[in-house]
View 1 (tube, rainbow, N blue to C red):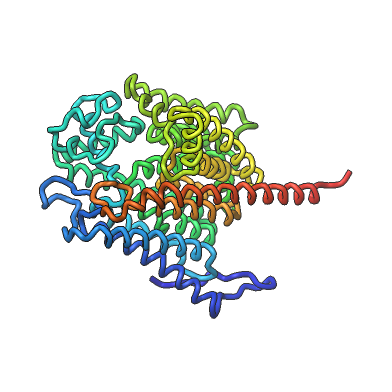
View 2 (cartoon, rainbow, N blue to C red; view 1 turned 60 degrees about the vertical axis):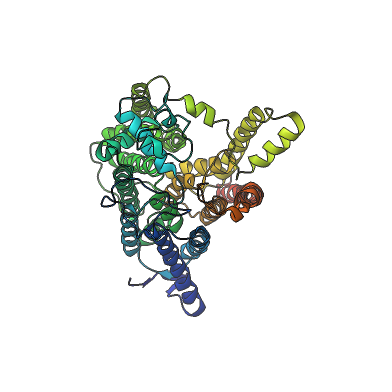
Length: 520
């Protein structure tokens, strides 16, 4: 890959990075590349503590070497991929030199495409997706029927975890999984491969949309490629892990691109936050806004929590009731249609999931304390109330620190606040925040990027391996010590640091605004 220098401004003059800076930049990109290579290698080696077995004919994709490596080895490889990826990405985002945006984009998309042909790694969620798709393809309701009720079926019988739980995923995700099931029939292997192709298409499509959105500025475009396409943690979780969140991110990024195009069509300008010349207004702004609303609705149809993104366009259109009504109306109609067609049980599991607390969040510490003080069932309502208050507080603080309140920036602030405040959160949820930060092109926001990156890396280490099956017995401490104690305390410290930074940054922003205001 050819490396191009991204000049830094020194004393008003542009000068290329030299000496120690250049060596540091090269090391950062080397770490990013090595992290991605380790992720690929984990899948290539085949079934292991990180890679579930995929029943089905061996000639069907995805393919692997079938080495069946030792659990200690692959878990160590995954840990190295996470640490190298986190440190490398942090360095690359601040590098003074490095590859241009297009090579990063091509490299990241190529890795994502390759991973589609390898068995998914990092969790067993794809087996659940396949089972729920199978139930839907058989004419059963995955929101009322569990995979455990069809133990003899080759697809539903392959579920490792959550076999006795109905689907928590939105109807759009279920429709995609049902289509994959129709392609794969009774082969888990082929069904998973079909889902992997859809997932890779969503990942690559998101990368291309982000590149198009930021293409007017080389620096912003390179930053977007690093935050998404070439982000080793997103390749690890969303491309290799094949989580359904990739579909939600694709819908939401497309919605914000359509929203920006609608604004540009009305005003004769380029999308918000992207540098470039304006032009004459063009027709079609209303249709683009309606399309944005439909895409927002489809994203919510994948996962309900993706609906936070819709508040960004709503904020930007708050002074234009007619345009806001078009977007909100299209989004609402899409959500009602998709969830209405899914049947009366579509939200059953969502309600139950909203009361859960994942082991690695700081709320696990609160849960343990409340249970010790008031009994086993005393924690739920208190934690729900506390998380909502924390979400409101963090959202307010981060929004005050927002350099430029564009729709993507507002959405990014709200999603970041939700990630830090949610009682139940997993590392692959962070993909939405990375994509939105990549779109917040008018905002110089390295601090928030750092907080999200640190959270993803720490939480990722807490979920090694995310699947409990085949974990070596002597590595139980990864759950009992790392996941349940070290990570929650680390994330609590990060949350407090985020609030402190946002409060100080917001106060500085208000002082600058006050000093810049004209005196009477």
